[in-house]
Amino acid sequence: MTEAVQSAHDTSFVVKRTRLRKILDNKTLWRGIAAIILFILFWEVCSQSKVWFGIQVPWIGKIPPPSEVVVNWAEIVQHPGYWESWYLSFFRVFFGFMIAQVVGIPFGLALAVNKYFRDIFFPPFEVLRPIPPLAWVPASIIFWPTTELSIAFVTFLGAFFTIVINVLGGARTIDIQYLRAAQSMGATQWDLFRKIILPGTLPSIFTGAAVGMGITWEVVLAAEMISGGGQQSGGGLGFFIWSSYMGGSMAQVIVGMISIGIAGYVSSSLIRYVGFLSMPWRRLF
Amino acid sequence: MAAKTTTGSRKKAPAASGGRGAISIRNVTKIYDPEGVNVMAVDNCSMEIQAGEVCMIVGPSGCGKTTLLNVIAGFHSLTHGEIYLDDELLCGPGKPLAKQGADRMVVFQNGALFPWKSLLDNVAYGPMVQGVLSKSDARDKALDMLAEAGLKDVADKFPGEVSSGMARRAEIVRALINDPKVLLLDEPYRAMDALTKSIMHEALLEMYDRTKVTIFFITHDLEEAIFLGDKAVVMTTRPARTKKVVDVNIPRPRDYKLLSSEEFRILVEEAKDAVHEEAIKAFEAGERELA
Ligand SMILES: Nc1ncnc2c1ncn2[C@@H]1O[C@H](COP(=O)(O)OP(=O)(O)O)[C@@H](O)[C@H]1O
Ligand SMILES: [Mg+2]
Image 1 (cartoon, each protein chain N blue to C red):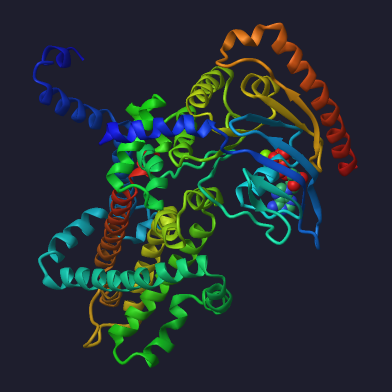
Image 2: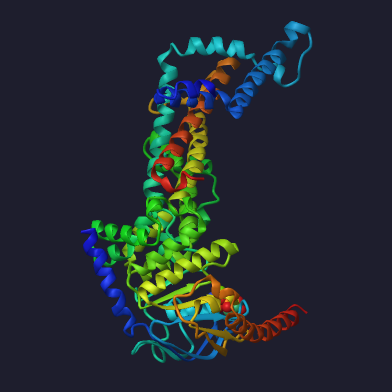
């Protein structure tokens, strides 16, 4: 406090200083860090307990300790194959996800604004929607010429239904008073769509994207495990985990699992960030 | 540029008082869902609102006030009767649904500023979408009008960033920029505390003295009705009919000293007696429905 007053003439210093202060004073942040450290310590102790104290801790005692995982990881990152798995999974996720967005958003909006379209397409959509994406795998393999395309299709389905349902729900629950107000002011149907329905649906579009992204990761990993490391579609983090398990390296399985955790976090952060940029009026909340 | 548009809007104001915006409601009946649930919301209701008059509508809640407003605005169709705006038939036999238009601007019960537009863009929206002004002219004019309403400093904020009082004032500005013949307000100050309300009243009266636009104002606050209105129309419990018209012959401009005057008290009492009778009827009807 006094420091800030003394150096008040140098404002940039004060601003920087207080921002750093804010981060350092953030109790939530510190609690989060402390919780993660405690969790890792707990894990280490439980895993090592047989060696250290001669007591086998159930369940967690069978898992390699974090120290071993870190050593394993440090070794794996030197192999290009590990990074290739990252790339392949990310590519598949974003490919399926993007197509689901490009098809799903207009489809959901069309369902929302056009009664005839809804009457025709909503019933079959609702019949197909409860089918889990992985149930599509065999059909998809028959349907598409390459395994890669089959995976892409299943991934697409995983995100598609969620996105459509969110867009439809969001567009249908826009306060009718916004539409009435715009219409009274002379808005045409096209104005209504562009200036009211679209921005009004944006929050739901991003909710759908966040949920859809999570599903896409699940589907990609499962599909990679099922399809295995064939010539055309090898690798991916799912296959990485599966082959590590087959190879008997539990530490490597955990490296794969944590890698997926990180990948998922990066993906959803990206979506949140794009949402933050495109909906300035929601930054207040 | 900005100065020019301002004088433009000022010039229109006196013209507006010269007989624009008379509403004639003749034997209007509104039945929701006539084949199904069949709710009669308005029954053979008539009233005359002069051009440039402030007409306050009071009545027990659920009696059909919003329904009547929605019919005038063109959001709902009517079942019988007719409504004229000046000499133009808005809706009537053969044309049950009035065409929505910028000549009748609504300020909604819960507020309907677009949350994704700044106050300025909200206000500029009407002239822009109608194509009467270019985007930059519309924004200039919007800024002038927001400044007139004392909202210049918050013009660039989103509705979610300002107080409900400011948002409501901006919404009235958004309506006025379209130069409507009639302003339709549905309990706009309902959820506000007494102090905010009094500030809103002052702002509304100031705006009215400037524009002399016809105002159709729904409220269930009787003091508000007498303080703001040229007349207060008391509605019966559902289905709504005109029960009593209390004429308020208090000269304008009015200010808050009026609230403690004898004249004001007498008029409020007069309206209160009429509303109270209907409120009891509504209450008993509600009891019966519950039983
Ligand atoms: N869309 C609708 N369909 C059926 N009944 C309605 C509808 N809107 C309002 N009502 C009924 O009409 C009556 C009058 O409602 P409303 O005009 O909103 O009352 P007020 O604004 O005076 O409180 C109420 O009983 C309400 O339940
Ligand atoms: Mg109402």
